[in-house]
Amino acid sequence: MSRAPVLLAGLVLTIVAAARSAAQNAAMDPNALEPGVTFRVYHVGYPMDRLYDLLDDQTPNVDERRDVVDWPDQGDFGGFEDHFVVHVRGYLAVDAPGRYEFRLTTDDGSRLMIDGAEIIDHDGLHAATAKTGAAD
Image (cartoon, rainbow, N blue to C red):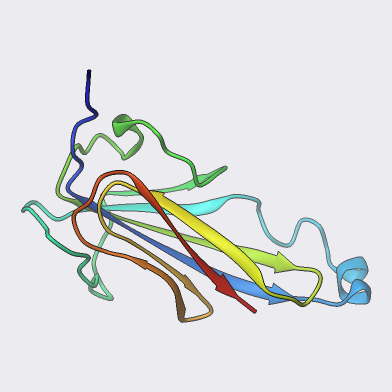
């Protein structure tokens, strides 16, 4: 049985939710926000056992827009195989109020933040597993 290599990496997703009314949706310029997410990779250069906070002025090794948040292959992280942190930032348009559930499946540490609130904490070294969280 083959086993995928262990990625000593971390993933931090930051979402800015934007709850809008139907009238606001109709009035919004569809070109105001580019679809996709900002994808940044920071090569840390040493093994990590948990997520570390990035410095405010830290420069990413990779900074680009990606269409989706789904990177199943080790090569999807800007050429880094281990010892890196990925920070993903995007906007989520919420058309109807309610409770929404989110799921992260990651190999090693990850965290999902929405409007500054931690929704999922899946930190630490672990195999590819899923963790869910919800937000109103």
